[in-house]
Image 1 (tube, rainbow, N blue to C red):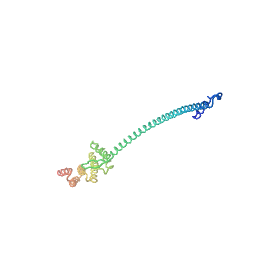
Image 2: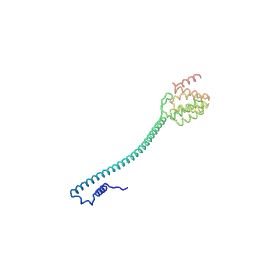
Image 3: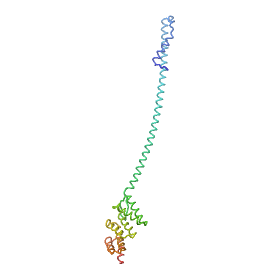
Length: 251
């Protein structure tokens, strides 16, 4: 389909209008009539030009409007796509933030489990590592359950692993008792001597000396009497000292 510019259409209209003037009748008009006819013709041409221009403008406006509508629809589609992508990213970000929060909560819980905790051991407050506490309690539970061989192994491993633990004196003391319960007095005496040497200020020290005296008595070792006397001298206010006095008084 051919396309015409606004000026081309105007010229065509002018030529078409001029063709209305019959050349054969030109001589029938005088000057006034000819002038009037020319003015009328020009008026008709101008009217046609205006009408044609209006039609062209209207068509151009419509085309422009259609273009704008098409562009607007395309833009809306792009915006919809971007909104979808934003929603996906927002959802991923929310999930990532939740995972991060859960991670830190879990990490905090794990760290709290590893933090030293305050415990009271034989009336004394101490800070101990949670794993250290669990290990000691598991070993001591074996002793109270009557599994003396297993408790001896577990308590021995504990004092080797945690020599500076607040539970170390107790572990060493119950290690001696584990041996004594198996009627291994020599090992029991050796274990309780470690309590006296390494933890002389422990509340378990007086009982360790009393246990040593008991083992010496079973072994018919005359050193048992001196051990009881040393016990009364070193720990006079202990309950073990009271028992020591009773034993000496009975001899």
